[in-house]
Length: 248
Ligand SMILES: [Zn+2]
Ligand SMILES: [Zn+2]
Image (cartoon, rainbow, N blue to C red; front, side, top):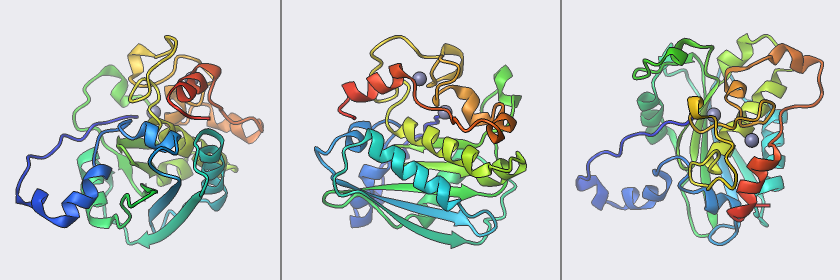
């Protein structure tokens, strides 16, 4: 899922140093696609992972994400992971605005020199869409949400309740899906080279078994993933988009 947080009005805060430093990490989803894909401005990534202590990330899933980054992005100095646990914010439900304000509180890594900083928030509870009144809003649960140019949230408790014995497989797939939104897929910062957008489901791919199909985000057929070693991958059209925007 891709959501946009409305920019708050400029105020005195904008004048202070922190605001200046953080501004480049507070843009919209897809705005840093080329910075992730190419080495023009950044040759390494620091991935800050903050998680509610009851729902820690799977190390295997994070490794899969790093492999995925190396597969599609030019980052000769690699990816560094910085992890930290937090107590539960006591949220049963989180709106995208709440997720965004948690990031303001918790995030410590911002872009610096040739290091591109990203922020991954692992939450307990569920995502709550306060605005969406569309017929699809009650359809399944949301496992992840991308809401800014360098950040996304993972609803790990929801992933755990999917009951898969290989829950890391679902977790790593959701991580890669959300990260691909930061890479500008589909048509959100990285221009489509062919028409493969799913018009009913926002910035998703219309190829059924593609990693960027919207089904991935709601754990579609997750039970089958216990048997099938083949996890969803980007299809050739999504990869062509990334390459046209400077990716591998
Ligand atoms: Zn999505
Ligand atoms: Zn695709």
